[in-house]
Image 1 (spheres, rainbow, N blue to C red):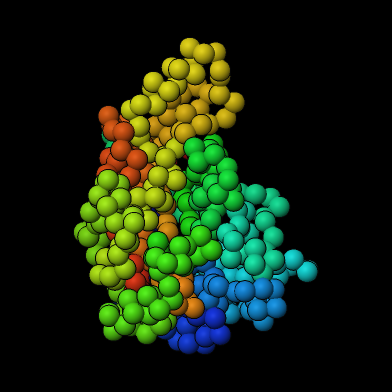
Image 2 (tube, rainbow, N blue to C red):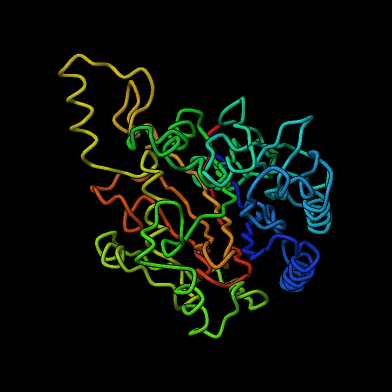
Amino acid sequence: MKLKVSLRIVSVQLNSQIGQIDETLRRTTVLIDRLKQEVEGQKPPDLVVFPEFALTGYNFKNRSHILPYVCKAGEGPSFELAKRVSKLFGCYTVIGYPEKCEQKLYNSAIVTGPDGSVHFNYRKAFLYETDEQWGCEENPKGFQQFKMKFRARPIDQDSAELSPVDIDLNTSIGICMDLSPYRFEAPFQDMEFSSFNLEKGTELIICPMAWLHSRSITEHTDSEKITPKDIECLLSEQGLSIFGSQGQYQFDFDNRATTKPVSQDITDINRDNPVYSNLDEPDMSNINYWLLRFLPFLSLDVRRNWFQSFADQLLPLKNSYMGMTPKHPWGFAGKNAALVIANRCGVEDCKTIFAGSSGIFKFNGSEDKDNNTDSTNQSVKLFGNLGKGYEGLLMRDIDLMIDR
């Protein structure tokens, strides 16, 4: 049976700093009050997504540094915020936070249901170097899928909508590094997280992020090319403090506004000298990379040749590979899935610049003759993105066609 699930989704972009939870909560209250005003008398959001470590800041140096901020699942300021948002709008809320379970520490995201109770708790499976500094543990269960209940309308053969029913939407969470190759050592083409979701039939993919802009200074950065002083000057030129753009908000509630796709060839121009300006505009280099990491969900005409090559060489697939399955050139053909990214923005330590660009996307399963692996691929729609530098809210209405 074909059903239409109509979702109103909100992605929240924040610039939290270590030691400033109260200040971040005050700014978050401004955002939530603005959202409440926007939806008054209308449909409230079905899902609100906050970034990774949304309230605490991100760059913790060691275990003792992060311990004052860790909480058990279902406790602490991040949970209380999610609980308040869920009860206010009657929605699901997802927020990233540092979790302590017994003596183990995790980079986690908690999900609260419409009544404010804990619905699910996910722990990051693939760790970034910053996670390892404070002793974060990998999720022992790896990637996980869970259910979220939403209203759906059955569609009959004449496309008439029938009475609504409740269905469970197959959902997963990926936290930032989960989208990348394991430890940056696994084969790039394995696409571990997106392959998991293709194989499991995930229909709603939620990604709380603290993804870096390429001007950031990491242990791999050439110190002669960029220094903390360079970042300070970069911010000063834009009239910003060393924290970035706290309290300067961007609100995008316009369903008619979409993000213009940009090819990877164009974004590659700035790879050696990435731009951190025009903070109200998204970072298309990062958006194209995120979509590349979801290549199994993108239509590629060349897959037919790949699939035939495997058959000719008598090398049958055991699982999915680059979107191919043991029986089909493209396992996602004709299906729908939504991707929600809530990335943080701002700067920490005059070293780490976050990319912002939070967005809402739909993979539509259309089999166009397309081999683009970026935002210009016709099988993905960019419903909208926030800019790279400002705190704010993005809200979009999105329809998914689901088979049951």
